[in-house]
Image 1 (tube, rainbow, N blue to C red):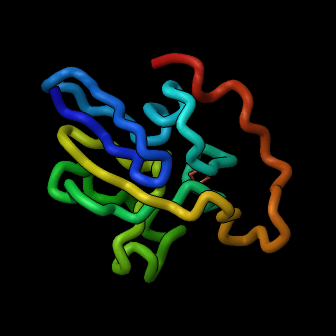
Image 2: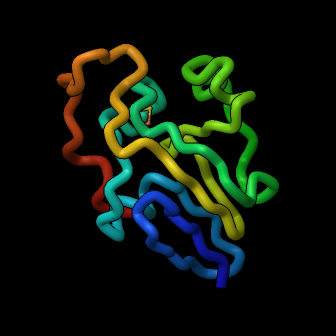
Length: 117
Ligand code: FES
């Protein structure tokens, strides 16, 4: 069974063979403390370093490329925009904030996104 290793939290999440799963959704479902705000590729709060399994990830789409810019080349992905079909491992800075959000918290709502699916 493939699994995502959330290295900073030292937690694994398994999913069914043949599934393609969203990385942020899996983290939220398992109560793993990946920082996030918008879940739509805008804030950049959920940027993760891909430690392993880059070959199992969907290629970044336009929105993610635009948001991350050079960070993409440095090995970052946005959890909310990243899907994986196999093993992958990620790390992050637990204190990181949005890319446009110097003092911490933005005003976007986190409700209503992570419940199902
Ligand atoms: S949570 Fe805002 S870009 Fe992913």
